Image (cartoon, rainbow over all chains, first blue to last red; front, side, top):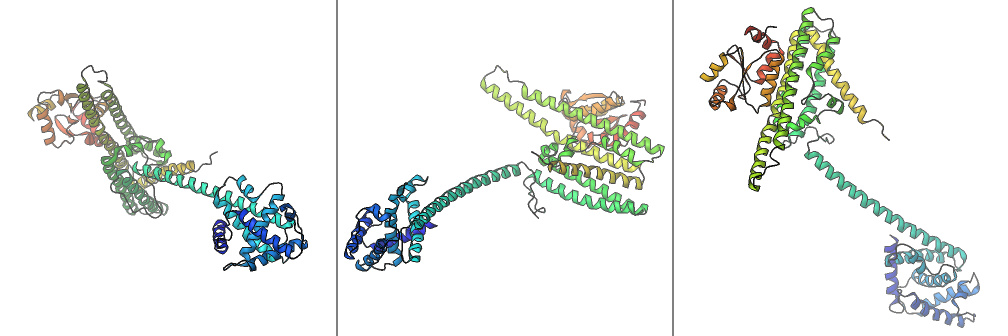
Length: 435
Length: 102
């Protein structure tokens, strides 16, 4: 940064000054050099006005040339160690510039700096450093070394540039700070979401299942199951489209049904670990969740969709499918009513006893008893999910029994396509443009 | 066990339950839906309830309730009942035992 160089430059100058003059106080420098300049100017017979302003207005006059020459003479006269031309010229130029500044409507560089938001020493030094660096090259360019308007303008521009640079730096730092804050917040959210078992996949990390957390583990298993399902269904589709033989088709159909058994087994395990995750349907896509019933799909609805696609069906098959639809509907109703009874029972357990008149210890015992009972009731949720999945599994098996192999194949394809479309709908929905 | 057998043979459809069990409520609802009127015995309100529960577990009923008997024969728990219902067997059993007529 400019500041650093300035400080280094200042240090060098300080070294060079060797106590002859201190750069911290420009007036000291001014006075010391002023005497030197005046003396040399007098010596060369030039009429130099002690008035600062007068010097400031000099514009390529012999006098200004003299001043520079005097500066050089000053250098040779004063015993300085390792003084570089640049440094001394910087000092003198800074000094003259100081004088020049007093001429301008807006005071000295010091005042200029103080009008900025940053009034610390660092910025002053950086300012000075920049000035010195630029002015040095300026003066070394021109052999005449004048205090002309161009220089003044250039100096002003430098100051402006320095100020803008400082503001930019400030803005950047503020941006960094807010980004850092946001990052911390996002990390916390991620941590919370992970704890709640929402599956967040990192690139190429799908094989890594977190055993400790049941919800996440299930989500991973489900994702894998879906992949395998897609593969099997594609195989089935190829078989159906290529008019494969019954025997061949039956093998693929059986493998698909066995694969369905697999998801019900996975769900059964997951229900033990985290029944509420299954019930929430968070492991499914949003559109699928619309139709969620006891942690999965409704068999009766599925059959309604299939009937139209499975025609032509024999009389017997129609009766069979119709009965199956009715049976699954009845079982679904029975399970739904059981769930309602459970909800009611749970509410009653949690709401009774709040108006107990017995002592505080009695209330605590009541409370704990209530909680224990409520815990027991919650435990039965697992049973409901299990029976709901049992119903789904049995319905698929029965459907397969009623239909021919080819019809079963088409039914399984239709079921898969339906859920695929629901999942695609979910993706579209999530990606929809929002204001 | 004797008490269980005894009660089970008294009616065409018999279900052993507990008053707090909601799955029992579901199975009862299913039977009513089918038009049956099964005899309901709540183990938690029966003096020999604990023995009966032990006996039902001995028959392989897990969880012990609901335990369903049709025509005096042990059918099973909720899982069995649902499976039999889906493939149409439950209705047939009820008709055979004269618990329902259509």
